[in-house]
Length: 130
Image 1 (spheres, rainbow, N blue to C red):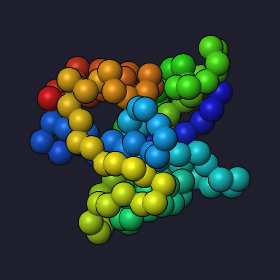
Image 2 (image 1 turned 90 degrees about the vertical axis):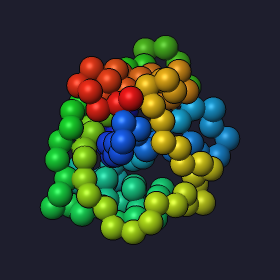
Image 3 (image 1 turned 180 degrees about the vertical axis):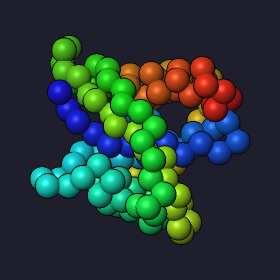
């Protein structure tokens, strides 16, 4: 199981997603924990590295935990995504590891990784994603 932390940021029925250089799918901002890091510390570090903004740790709230087949990995390798909402400071901009930022709707579900598809379903079912 691959454990990751992700940021859920929805505005006007669209969710912020990223595409890394050389990748064919969009992913929610976030990534893997470093040894000894908490979920929130990972969230703050990863979002800063990817999107050049500062997450306010005090505003972070657990959104949910989702699991699915890991995108681009052999069958049976699962990813577990622990998702948080949080406020941020700064202007969203892709870092050097991110090729593109995109605001996706439910119609873009087929453009994201399998675990993100489950998150998209949950957001649609709860009326948060257009």
